[in-house]
Length: 326
Image (tube, rainbow, N blue to C red; front, side, top):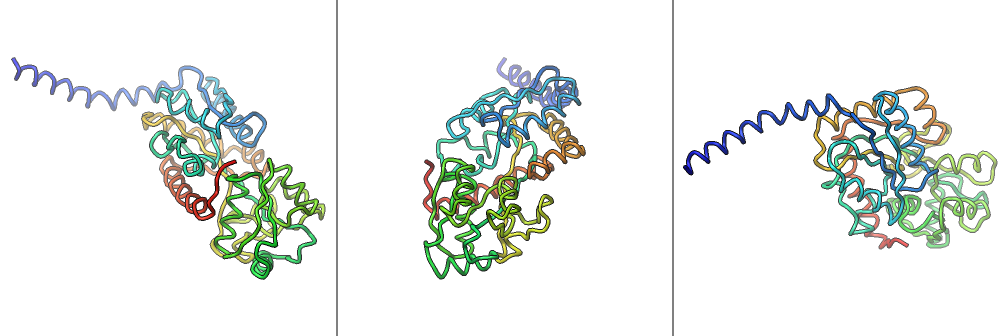
């Protein structure tokens, strides 16, 4: 009797192993059959919202099923992220978030682990920042700023949008690579930080290109370089920070899409293909470019590798600078 039960169990297991790929393929072939919820763990109106709603609109048009952006801000993005982690891994609850998903792992140890609890879909866009200084500062290049900071430790103050934000971390990375010491002055958001720079309260900052560029072109601040490895299409006249005096510097804001861990590869692949298709559309590329973003795309595996590198890179910066979230 026991032998018969064992053979029956083995036969069932083999049958499931054979049928499962077909079931997964069938799921992908039918997907989506109902509305898809795209969680944005930030408040409406920001950069993540713009990216999420742009991509969601194109997915809706292509699939004939609504892709609904659901803003769930709070707890340093943990509320929205947790909704996705706990959702059924069937492709009907997705996450579109920013680079904070990489930094929060170190800043907030209780945060969900994106490497094990989420399935990467695609890196959607990157957004270069600009290193800018007040016009009164006797530094007209990145190299001159570094030399000045070396000659006057902690006498050059830099503003950020708050402790642990991308603007703060970029300056800390800059300080580390340049072996300099500058004074950090945190503000409550990017708006107050740029106002502080324009008013001369601080002498330097890293902020998104669309925030800094109008001020630079009006002569109220001096732009020294873009943070990314390549020059920005929005301001091709600006060198990169690496070109202008700090080789190896490469940092940018970014936005990516994830699904719950365990989502079938076939469904992840279908969503990935749709995101990549949308990113190639001229109106999408133009909208992102106008807002200082570069359409990216790529395979799920590429996002997984990028996320690992970002987590490790920023963990080192956060620990060395002893950064604590406000």
